[in-house]
Each structure stands twice: as structure tokens, then as C-alpha cells.
Image 1 (tube, one colour):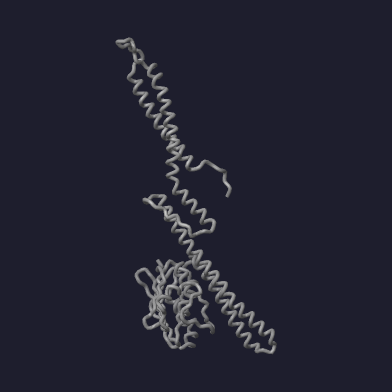
Image 2 (tube, helix red, strand yellow; image 1 turned 60 degrees about the vertical axis):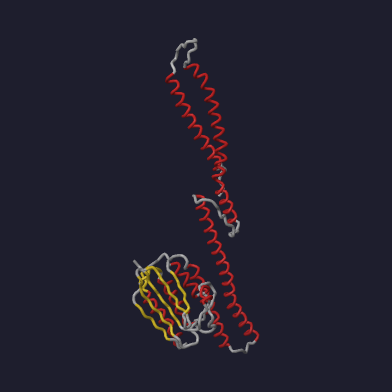
Length: 359
């Protein structure tokens, strides 16, 4: 937005300092003058015939007062200009850092030293904002790169299948349709997960009381065929746990947790336990599964987009797309909750979600 140029803050502060000093000096001179004139008579003769009177006092005092006022004005302008420059120096550094960030460089930091004051607090807050913004931008760029790569894979597979079918018209059409269907299903699942992940960071406008125990039962019923095919025992226990939020996103969160526990429960024949409850005013959801040991150093990366565990199912109806725990973490964060991942000593993973309870 174009604005008309105006006087700088330094100039305005300088004029304010000089004006205040001039007014203070004028008041002081006025008070002195008033007291002197009050006790000096109009006409009074001394022994030598010289009488101090108001006329002589005015002629003597007025030039000196004028010189003093001029000195105060010049001193106020020069001193005010220097003081204003020193006072606004931190603001100049913050402005330069903001311009640098506006040009795309988010790695610059002000790192202002000295005692804590208003400018130091503003500088520290600006540095914290730049650090967080740099992390978000880096995460978004990494996410975009991974998403483009993941979306390119099913499209490339589909193109390859179609090229093979075109070169071999006598090929098995039924097998081609099945493989294309599986690839297309994966692409749709990945696209839907990306859409949910992109909007789940914003708190939904429509909120309601959601019982996580019912949500867990619904998710378990949906994924029961997958558990039966893999020979996994799926148990849902616990009591009522009312949370406040989006029923759609919370259902997606629980479904992803249970699906992730089933998919990564290798070898087949293990168990997946889902437990709901309350702890004070907090709703607690725990999803625990057996399986292969999870390296502790791998646990912090599991909530990043397109990061997968040690095993991955590449075929089947519920093949993972690498966004399960990332989406769960995003939904939990949008609802003001916490997500904790802990490897089990005997193998598998324990996922604990804590959400604020409904009022």
C-alpha cells in the first residue's frame, strides 16, 4: 500500500524533546522573572543615586533570557536527535530483519543483547516467530516434495500398466482391471489423506461432544475384516470418554490409529488393544499392538509425513500411504491435545492420545 511520506519517528521524537525542553525552560524563566519583578520597585534611589528598578532589570534580564532560550532550543534539538537515534537503534535492527525475512531469508536472527526491555522482548518474540516460521516452511516444502513423489508413483504405475496392455491386446483384461483398481484406490486414499491433513490444522468450525468409546467401536467394526484376514485379535475396552471437537476428524484419527496398528502388526496373529477412559478432565485413548520391535530412534520420526515403520504392507485394501500417524498428530494438535508414542518392550507400539474433555 502506497502512503504519503511523513516525518520520521526520530524527527518527531527530536522535536518532542526540544519542545518539552523549551517549554520547561520558558516556564522556569517566567517563574524567575515573576519573582524578581515582584520584589523590585518601580523607582528607588540608593546612596549613590543609582536605583535598581524594573526597567533596568528588564533590559538586563531579557537578552540573557533570550540567549538561554536559544541555547535550550539548540541543545534540545541536537541532544534529542542523538537520544532518539540511540533509542530507535533496536527498532532499526528489527525493521532490517523484517525486510530480510520478507525477501525470503528466514535464517536471519536479531539476537539483541543487553538488559531486558520492551525492544528486547520484541526482538526475542520476532526471533522466535522467525524460527517457528522457518521450521513450518521447511516442513511444508518437504511435505510438498514427498507428496508429489507419492502421487507420481501410482500415476506412473497406471501408465505402465496401460502401456503394457496397449502393446499386448491379448493380455489378461481382468488382471489389468484389478491392478488398475488397486492403484487407483491407493491414489484416492492418498489424495483424501492429503486433503484431511491440510485442513486438520485449523480447528473445525462445527464442534460437538464426541464419545471416543463409540468412535473406537465404530473404527474397530470397520476394520474387523482386515483383522480377521490377518488373524489379529482386536479388542476395544474402556468406558465413556467425551471429547469436544469434530466427529469426522476424530473418527478419522481413531481409524488411522487402529489401521496402523493392524497393518504393522507383523508377524500375523498378534493382538491390537484399544482402550478409552478419562483422567481428570482429559479424555485418554490408548492403542496398543504387538509386532516387531520398534527402534527408539525411529519413534520421533513416525509422526512426520510419509515416514513409515520397519514393515509396510504394499498390497491389499488398506495399504498404507505414509500419512497415518502424521494425520493423527495433526488432528490431535488441532483439538489441543497431545500424542505420545512409546515402543513396547516385547515389540509393537503404544500410542496414547490425550484430548481436552467436553465441558
